[in-house]
Image (cartoon, rainbow, N blue to C red; front, side, top):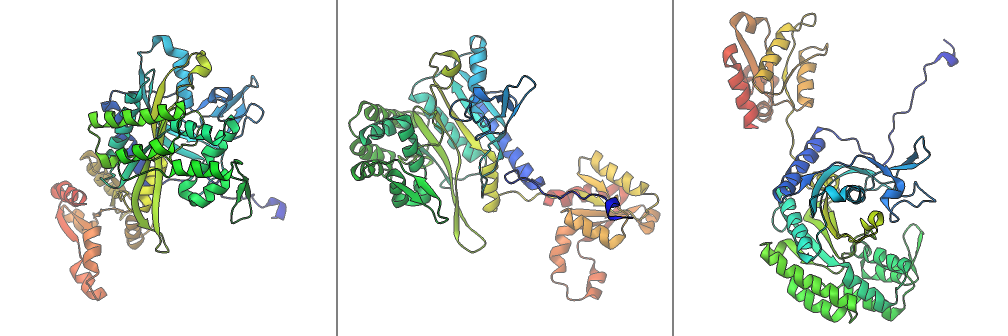
Length: 489
């Protein structure tokens, strides 16, 4: 065979930001979606799936640019040369759906949705290009009580996925307060405001000093990359930071501090009134004080928010591989967006919503060790390579009894089969060799109990004599014995 006849080998690789997921993570994500959507349904929201693709211009001016249709999203042209984009979030498609179907919808329209979204951005730790979200939105309801309902429901959703009291917080702010501060700071153009908002969004990452640089001339990071700043003067920077750091121990104290820091503009006063109304509504909804914090540093990244904004944060700490403390941080967020549907209808339609970042939440729980470790199937060993009928029959019997089971389908001997069962995380193996068949019995090995007992055994001879975790039962007693092992966990 010449070199030209050598079969071509493709390189096994995958794009960054598109994670492979195995069963434990998939199960955790699916369980979280079920837990969160059950909360949404209980609060009266209905399911809606809008599909993966939208016309690029339907996603709005905040996402792809018409001149750069692939900026921030993954886009392609269809046979009509129209640009289609994979959805960037679940909110922009909802705005399009609501505008198309407004006349036939019960108003307000309350919907929830769960599924993958895609962002053409630089991936990093905990930051993916494809990830799962689980959203709830109310379209057609103005007023702070609809926003407060979202905040209360977000807290309930966090508890539903397993976050205990003190392990999470829903942080709340309002864009109207921010608008008042930005107006007094001289950031009056849309571009200037967006630069300031993006700077404030980095407060937890860069601290006050780093944000001050971004509010001023700009900031150079450790790699030498320079980010141009908002160009504010020193007094204006001080005013913006005073507002961002006005959070206090209680919501009432924060409102009092914000009254001094937010200035005296019409927007600032309106924003303060929103938080005061939110406080009253949260009390009516019986939301525990510890679950919700008023935090002026919360700005949210998307430009389409017009009122209250909120962010769900996982507070539980863990240690990384170097023993350093790690906190997961933001795992969801939302807010009021009264201008989004108007892009299609020309009329302002009030809307508010909240999104749980399922992929990020699952990644956070994996880091803190809170993802459930799943058992694999019961493995039935095969002692006859030419005719595995006995193993197949036993596995079928176990499955019919509602147990997860498989017959070994490889061609290896006893020891490799046991190793296979161990790697699958099998709780037990079932064996039926010639001796067992002759007696009408099966041998069952509890792999978890056996592994625990084996640690105390000091010699191979002792192990062979004791056979830790191994029992022999009549075939008719097999189901009950295996079930007992599986359910013991």
